[in-house]
Image (cartoon, rainbow, N blue to C red; front, top):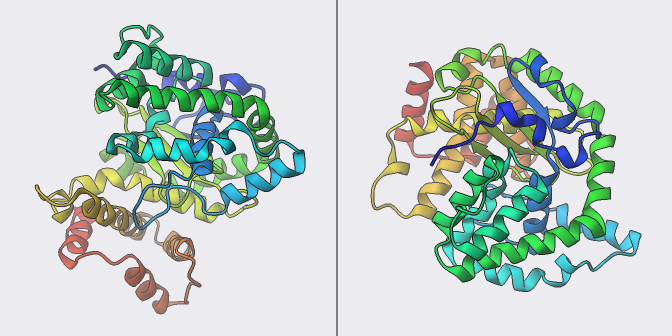
Length: 359
């Protein structure tokens, strides 16, 4: 299946909110030589729904911010719109998603529709549910994602459950989320700009050699109020160097850009991790156990990358991830030990990662 390029169509990311400062659609794509920082409403809406439903997944790092659901519920109550249809159907939707392992796709699905927008993505999901394949989806922005859904969710009732979820999200958009997202993006405009500047000046130039070696020369960094410490990365077409997407958390009420930058580095380390022959790729191993080890190893790999290319950033990185585990960071050499204990991985894997970074 041919993957559409992400970067040439980044202007479509926030097409439904193109005038909102901070949205990727509002930025000058031609002027951006590397990674573009911004926000995407259709990705946030999708993840918002999963957080409210409580379809949290498993693993040592949270997929969604633990406080997000309570904050949003309080805001809805203050506005007199609680419960929305999403809130009322949360339990049944969670049951649908828990019924089949294939629904783990939901945690990544909007990344495959990043070049689309909310109406295009939802229309494609309805067509796949109706026809059982992606043939009816003619919009190139949505066709790749539709094909992924058809391949992973092979039963009609599974595809229909996903389409029903999209209908509920459409109602959530009108009842609450559109105004909420627009206000949040507008209020964060300065933070988006500062994050872009810090990435451009503090990390991107120093990580350039690694990014080039990993074919991560250019892409989009979507910061989301919903996502937890476990972000998302989609490398797009492996033949292209500019077709990459990262989604990282930026919790409501937070202005901690160090934590956001740390999460970005961690996501960028996954291509390195996949080059390391280790126990996480051993055939026949329990997939959940292997995924959990990879999650922790990615945290360690990010620290190793910074140790080589930007050593002055290592301490802030380690502190951010220790705090992500709800621990108080220690100081000096004690922080290093605390970090390694908190994100413990097998010794052979640690040595293999170090060798790969230094290779």
